[in-house]
Image 1 (cartoon, rainbow, N blue to C red):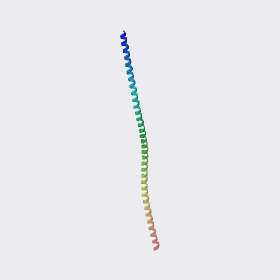
Image 2: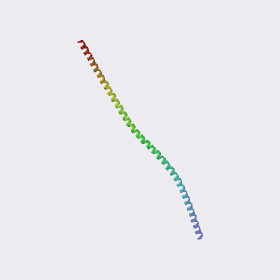
Image 3: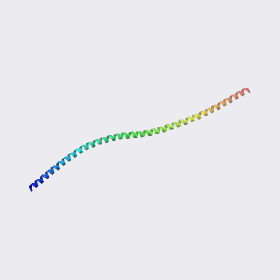
Length: 124
């Protein structure tokens, strides 16, 4: 029996030592994995921060582009209004020129009438 007990104790000791070896190895590997994982997380966090900065710049460009497009649309509307006003002014100038020509014609007729009247008065 003592051999059986010794064999049993030996098996238990070997089992405990094996368990402790496996536990130690597993714990060491876990710590190494966590260290590598922490380093990777720091790298990923740095990359995310860099992407956030780029995204903020991009969003700023988009906002400025939107403002510029709005201003451009307003300026185009103003330019169209100005061209319409110019066209109306050209039409008004044509009308005024026609009226001036009519007045010139009337003045010429009056001058002719006055000349004839003077000639008639001189003859009489």
